[in-house]
Image (cartoon, rainbow, N blue to C red; front, side, top):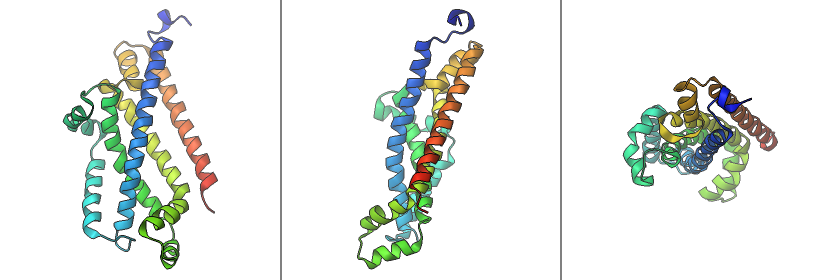
Length: 222
């Protein structure tokens, strides 16, 4: 197919956009997962009856998580622009998008992690306590191993949601596949750009889901 005739999107443009999307996805997922696991662990451990029961901490942290999750990503992105500029020195581009993406996904992962940890039978925690395990040991050596299958599924769900957000970030100057769809598919009426954008996102999401489901089945304890 002649690129000049059928589409304005060259292989270089497409690969650059794909690379930007993968960069946004990878960095924000790692940062968001680290923060989310901490948030989820604190929420699970400080709830009523938890290993580190603390109602004030649980209520305050829960309120912050719920508040952040209540904001649509596009509004959150705009709302924290000053914070983004403070961290990375700009409000456009890949790194500027990573900040709101991380802020968006961390609380979401936190709630998913909390739910996964709460699925662990109470008997596991009681057994750990009877052996004299510290709260950190209970979390690291008992809760996490027991919940690993559920945690993998939770992170898979979060990753799929993050793919959607990276595409949305592209429409506001972050680059990536979303910017490709807007700049070429919509503004320049390039049908091929829209097709390749849709196909790329479908393949990416299906691949993530397949890998996540496979790993979850392998590590889930029967």
